[in-house]
Image (cartoon, rainbow, N blue to C red):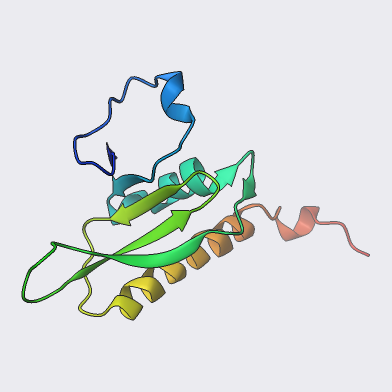
Length: 124
């Protein structure tokens, strides 16, 4: 994970408690295989997800002739934007859909993991 402030230079990773009070937008960068970590760290707080989370797309490089979008999501409660750096899409809506689908798959796979084996389930 790489973290940066909106003004450019990376913020320190020392866990300073003053950084926990988020007043400015912060961007965090993850690889696609780290989506579960990003979900746990940014969206969920004590196991309860932030329902205001919105999916988006960030331009890969400003000012390039051929635009490419990285999938992202924004958590308004913490004012964090999480960008997936190793996936690029030519259209913004495809990047949003990819991000929404990955989060949906993560939630569904975790629901299936929590079920006990059928022989241990209570019958009504």
